Amino acid sequence: MKRQIITLLIFVFGLCVSSSIMVYAQEESSVITEVTTASTKSSQQSTKSDKAAKKHGIIRKKTNLKVNNQLKLKKVLHISNKSLRKYDYSINHSKVAKVSKKGVISGLKAGSTTITVASKETNEVFAKVTVNVENKYTDSELRLLSSLIYCEARGESYAGQKAVGIVTTNRVASSLFPGSLSRVVYQPGQYTPARSGALASALQKYDRGSLQRSCIRAAQEALNGSKTVTLSNGDINMSGYLFFSRYVSGCRLQIGAHQFK
Image (tube, rainbow, N blue to C red; front, side):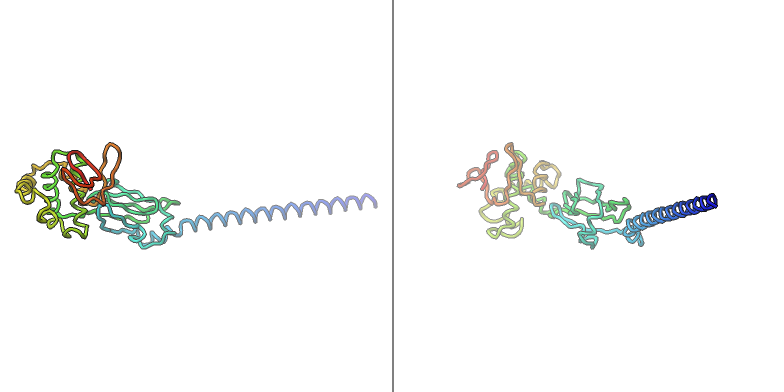
């Protein structure tokens, strides 16, 4: 009788152990299933926005920008700052324009370039933006200022030539002078070459393609809004300068034979 009781107890104990193992196995299987399901959901969510963007294919936009001007990428794509932070940007012609990490496009020189906007998570392309960068001046303005710089500063350094161009464009923007380049250059009593005939000769030289190239480049930079000249002691901002000559009372800067204020 005693032996039968012991046998029965052993059987019950074994049955309990077996049940515990099965319950543990079921719980562990449930945990694995939950982890797998959560992982699948996370993966689906990470690509949800990109799939939505790709629903109608890559977004393609075109925009125009002036040299030395800026434009926000979010305005071109019509998206929020929060959405913009999900993307990286690359540009194929970095000399034409550049784009900052915050999505600000800056025009550098005339030309065309494409900005590719891609997901930081998946590298999928969300959009391609073609940026056409344009000069701020007309051909006739470039012709006139290049010829004036040639007359006034062809023997000076490039900084001296550009400084003459900057002073002239500053006058166009100033309320103290006429509001166009032509009227500023031909204003009575101002630029000697305009009344001596030297400017007319220089314009002919420009038309023949024989004008000094540095004078043309200095005019391009000044007309596109550059206000700095580079000297041996660093960059000088000339945005407030309106006068130059061999001698200027109250001179603030001298470059070569010219004084500026």
